[in-house]
Image 1 (cartoon, helix red, strand yellow):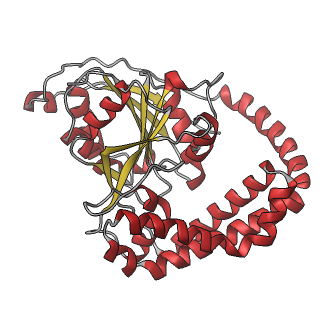
Image 2: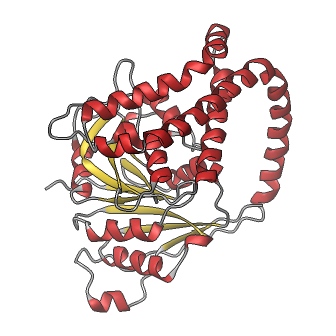
Length: 365
């Protein structure tokens, strides 16, 4: 059995997830192989006695727990939360997993096995399954927009790795990437572009599976698609040359056809729950259409207004850096060393006893 250590970095998603459910599944399927570290980012609104009990039980199993408390929970904080967790990862293999997922049996063993693979890519993506028993129409459409490319292959289907990783379930081999300093944020799409060798795609770890559920209303779902699409188009325009910009500005209306075509090819070839995909296709199409129109608007804005934005951003960044320096004096960091590291399965007595964790309290100005 593989004993390669891993650091599991648990972060909240944009909204609608449950840290309690995720931590419960990590405890339920833990393989009791040590050493293991878990870094958990917890917004105040998700803290609860149930979550604290799960953390106590995981600590009683011998897992090194590092808890990062954050005051606010905003959609744009996801990439920053990953960077916070990354800064405290100790082991060579770091697995990112978000609170809109619960792990399936064999998850721990799959990632430990990938950590030992000699031919591993620097990055890998796990599988994401829809929690069809709880997902409504809108939520299923959001699932296919976000994680449709990472569904498993059915018995009569076939598939191939993509040049992408699932945002809520992916991993990094720290020894195979080069980072000079601690990143301020971690975006999975950016890291795939930066650290994947030319012509090589992230590994496809089919045995590592999570079941995804996220509660979200229709209005929030469409607003989120639009916001993310615009940000993606605007950021891509700023990084691209003028030829690419002109192509996207003039070909923008076709983005939805490309998006829908890619997703449909993946789902149809893998043949996983085709009926579910077809039943919710109208909602999925409208969500993709919202993203596509917003991305087109982002390309237009980024192409014609980026010089003005860059000048404004330079001034904003200078002011932000000055604010961070003054805010740093007000920050408070508290660390309490973990005192219980028994590798055995937690007993009733261990559950009753108080267990200390490593606490990191961060306050933002």
